[in-house]
Image (tube, rainbow over all chains, first blue to last red; front, side):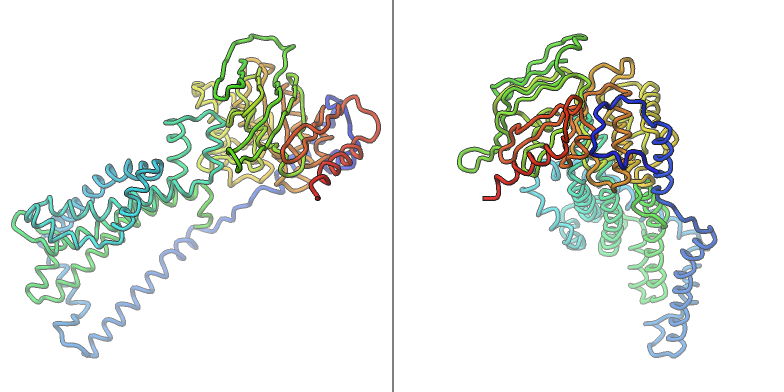
Length: 305
Length: 268
């Protein structure tokens, strides 16, 4: 029974009275026990099953339909290859080991490009979010650039930089910087206004406010921006590699795909597309998903996932 | 520390007055606050004079638009008075809001540590102090819980511990902390509110902190405060004052009647 319910209002005037302290402690403990949110735990194999089974079934279904369509021979072989032909094409580059150099060429480019984009986009996003003049000046441009396909930059970049790595990085940067910067701006805009106020009354000023309040509060939006920035940098890279091929550039995934297309080898084209897809999904699952989940779960934003 | 915010708005003078406990903790002399200028100007507070002794628990009572929050913001230093003089003779005032406003990425202990961290207290000392304060609000075992793992009442107690961390010092509990509370229990259910009111009184007695508590609720004011100050609305001025400790008769009825009267004036 909570104390004092009946006494409220009849004004016990002298607060320092011999209090029913023990009683109130017990009432409080009871309330805490009743009110604390409960978390339901599910067995690990149930979770694993729920995560892995649906995509596995989808993949099997997809392969079955593909095989069926190929067997029905609606389209000639050079348009729709058999799944096994694509697999063989894939095993060809695996066996001679060139798959690793192809993957490394592309992934290292995308990764380096993404890191440079992070270094440029983070201060840019902070400036746009916190300085009104800068926001008015380049805010619309920044969100506009996000919807401009970065392929559009390839011809210009080739004219400016020739068939060199600079062309590739230029296109990758223009693809990913707007996404990351916009993500940070959105993250900062969505901070509940009470949090900066709390920081202020607790004594956070300027830099310490940015470090202890602003940046951590904007982290979920920033992470979402980074994830999108990675996707944009990956797809910009592919566009650049497909269009800009040359002896200086080495063979990445895009050049590998373009090679298949030049030799009318549809199996190779499809194998390249799958490789591009697998890398994209792999980075998302291995890098971004765990980080994002950790951040969200720590804030109670993704319970049960 | 004494901070005087003078008539020439924008001028703050600070002097040290070590251990003069007989002084007032908070002194407002003819404080007014006007937002905007010219025809669009809105006067939120007019000629508010209020003295609060160190360690006193004062409730500010009033209907919407009485400028309670404006008043707290002025005392907290978040805003400056347009006229009048505001003197503080306390450590840094700290604020508690209607919502707990805990930082969701920090656990309860780190939330309490934050104001200490911002003031440069070394890690070991602030950890110890945070644990001490969490034990004071009876959450000693919950330091590693995140805000979303706690109930509303528990979160509000963490917020209380954090506010205490911001305003009191561990060496001397009577160092003259000032706690500003803006309807801190208004969003809680009735049972939790009742228990937390009791807890606040216990913590207040244990720490000797000066409390300025804003509420809409006459019962709450009477249960908590030693003194109740009624503010009228638009602009806010002091419309009545009751010494709860030494008053006779039915204060609840008397104060409610005054509050009604203040509100009725706005009917026309």
